[in-house]
Image (cartoon, rainbow, N blue to C red; front, side, top):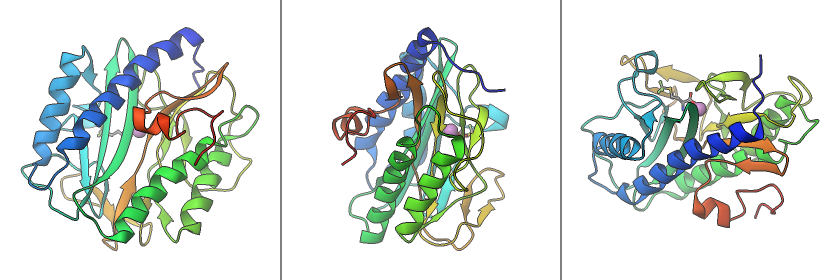
Length: 264
Ligand code: MF3
Ligand code: CO
């Protein structure tokens, strides 16, 4: 069952998503060679509590940290550790909080110092593919219209879409219906209507889409060890159109924020 949200509920979800965006934004300048991924996690957890929220991922199905930090061929669910980032890596940060009864969830992939042109292109394709999906989040469309738009864009860039993980509804629970795959044929699945709040999260790879999970039971990486990138926003369809609840200032000013604005 899809739980559609009222305007008042979306107002509350704006707060939890804003905390997620704020902390991800604060982590960005920490992404430098030498920083340990556990330092990023500790910072995120401390700031979450300072802002009166709770980390959404900690203890979720036994996940041991507040932040997911996935490096290079790691796609998602990388567990923070003493491992340090190094120049040329790309790193995906996935973060969620619970605030006042509502979840927010977002992810970004950042370069560490100078990265290879392919890595830069992959990161940009992940972000753009999310924007392509968002363009389809309009009343009357169906969920798989989002999926197909993401897949078409990613594959046109010469990359592939991860299939074993999907986006999701979000609200009082971190994962609600519907599932939002990043691939598929258009015109299928539930109709999109006002009050729908989704965490849309394309995960893409420079090589093939097959996935392997490490012995830690969490870290998902590409089977062919090609680079992966992940971008996620919590978004709501409101009376005023599409709103990216977890957009940071940079994304908002680039037009990746409101449907009314063109996507550059
Ligand atoms: N952001 C992830 C998602 O949307 C949540 C990570 S799962 C956890 O599914 F276990 F790490 F919390
Ligand atoms: Co998510």
